[in-house]
Length: 242
Figure 1: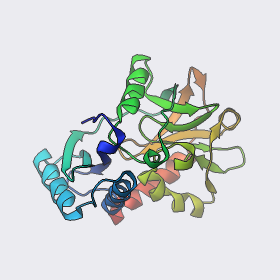
Figure 2 (figure 1 turned 45 degrees about the vertical axis):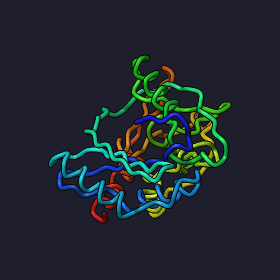
Figure 3 (figure 1 turned 180 degrees about the vertical axis):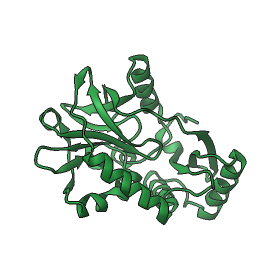
C-alpha cells in the first residue's frame, strides 16, 4: 500500500518466522507509536494493531515472511503480509538522490513511500540489488535497510535520522553487540572518503538481515567477514529474546 501524502499514515515492517514469532515486536510497536505522535495521527491502539498482526500472520501460514503494519491518520490499522525475497551476498549497489522531507517526517516510515520504491526499481532496472541514497557527497540511507561502514581503524559508522535516514530497528538490536565485541559504533554521514578507505561495507534491515556490499556504481568495495559475523550473531540473539 502506498498513500499519497506523508501525513496519511505511518508504518513499520516486521519479520516473523514459521512459528509466528515476530522479531523485536515491542520495538516495532514503539516505532509505530512514536511515528504516529510525530506526524499527528491519533494515538496508536496497540491492542488493535497487535491483534491484527497476529491474525494476518496466522492467515499467511506456517512460513516466514514480512508484515507491513500501518496506522492511518483516521485511526485505522492495516496489515499486509508477503514472503521474504532473499538476496545473495555480496550485493551490488547504485547511488540515487535521497528524498528530502520536512522535519516531522524525517526518520520514520510514512505514507508517501514512493521515492523509496522508485529507488529500488531504479536499482533493479540497472541490474543492481539495492539503491544507496545520497545527499551531497554522502550516503545517508538505502531504499531498504541501513548501510554500515567499518573503517580502517576498526570503528563502524551508520547514518541516523539527523542525517536523513529512517531510524532502524535492526540498528537498535545490534549496537550493543558490536560495542561489546570491540567495535565502537557511531552515527555519521558516510562520506566518499570513508567509503574509499573502508575495510567492510554492509547493509542491515528487517527484511534483509545483514548483507555484504561488494560494489557501488561499478566500483569494487572490500568484502570482509567481521561485521557480518558479529551482526549475524546479534540477530540470532535477538530472535532468541523475542
